[in-house]
Image (cartoon, helix red, strand yellow):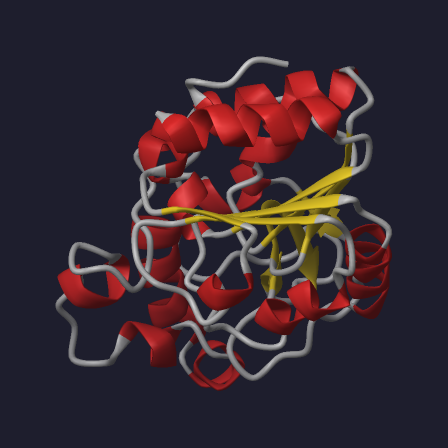
Length: 241
């Protein structure tokens, strides 16, 4: 509990907090992570590796099979914000949280009410026609069978998520890096910091307090001013604004 008290004291003193989160943030909402022993990549049994299915090449060549996997394993519309999301919403309302940078595509930070969210890998709630760029909600994907088609031109609809082999959105990255570079406290939580280029963003931080909360080791542990090796939702449930 000493580390929880230390974290609370840092938050109380901080004025420009940025939160950087990964898949471990949403496991308490029933969404599996990717690389843990019980994660998606280990638990899903298929002839094609999950990382290959979630690639831009596979989407282009095997679109129907991509959507079979995507609907079954990547979309969790019934998931609800957990203690992490709720706390960050309160922190933003108190004007202490300057931004959330997330690798997650589940949209839970925005569903919790946060406005200053930089979704590095996109969101399941944003979809578009690859031909005419007409935008569609998640319901269009989930209520379709096979390959979802555009009502306007008949083109293929693609989730606005970053697949393997695709670049991150330039303007989202610029905003995320700007917030990180201007923060006095950066909380990195629920991420292994192994997915590039997003993981390298923490190199833009030059503030006072680098906090890392994760069950497993990360490449940045030695740089942390405060390291908490625990479940992020359990930690955040102990904090107050």
